[in-house]
Figure: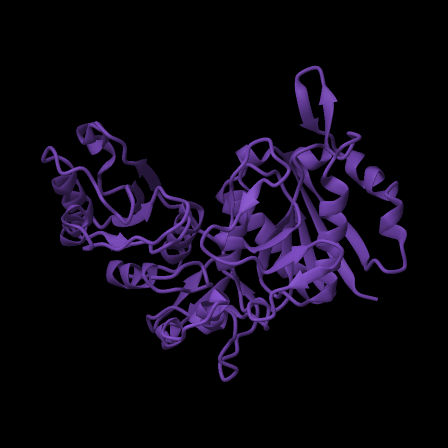
Length: 388
């Protein structure tokens, strides 16, 4: 029988009503799981629960908690066939993105899930999300960090929360779902063919200490264009390169813990006064994600932004340009209003989510790479997180 480790970190899924609103309660969730008869069905895998102490509202999760989750998985990696992480929905996509970079050489399923309605409530969506996540983890078809919610299995670093109160709370706007769940669990065969992060290792050649383990990377040719040139009604062919590994490359599982880094996000809007952000553009700022219009466009009025970005670049700050649009890709230079960003030293985030861009910056800073190496790798797919 397959054995799955459930990491219960907190979140709505296990909360109970209190005089101050819903809150997690230590010890409650283990008993609640024991009362779900479906989990005792012979078709279900064996499972064991690790409950975090303290339990967290996901709004309070940060680098320390990501590292702790990574350590628990690393310490128990050989004992289980897969992992299910129960997590609050607000920052679940951030955690999924972070773990996708931290868990190097991962060759087992790590499925994040949660619920919009607590398990203790009659109409809770928790039961289906827990049961299906356990089945997916036990099947082992998807051996990467992924997120299951509301009938959709998504690559973790492609997911984003799209609804605050709907039961279909997550989307993968720029990448097909890994599986769709109805009467059956229908896997996307192209995208679930033994994905390994070694497919798209860092393009730099370096070896440095990074948290709990060292890091080494070698360049992997990008063959995505070969697939884009093929006419087909099924666009998943475009994503083959992100799903099928080069079997000549192998890597033992290890954990790279994140180091603290000063990272900011600025969302461009009409009438923005860039001078208000000048005080944060110091040598202490490691990276910034700039959420721009469309394919990477910025306002042409005023003369404040580009000098500010140039100063940030001169200070060693990595400026990554993402789009405010859920779907689509940043193409710096496609318009005059975006080419100025390249001239100022910014890099393209392709079609990465903001969550993935932030996690990727944390990861690359944690490797101790040079600024040029980080810039190069921000525009290189490392875990199937984007197209560039």
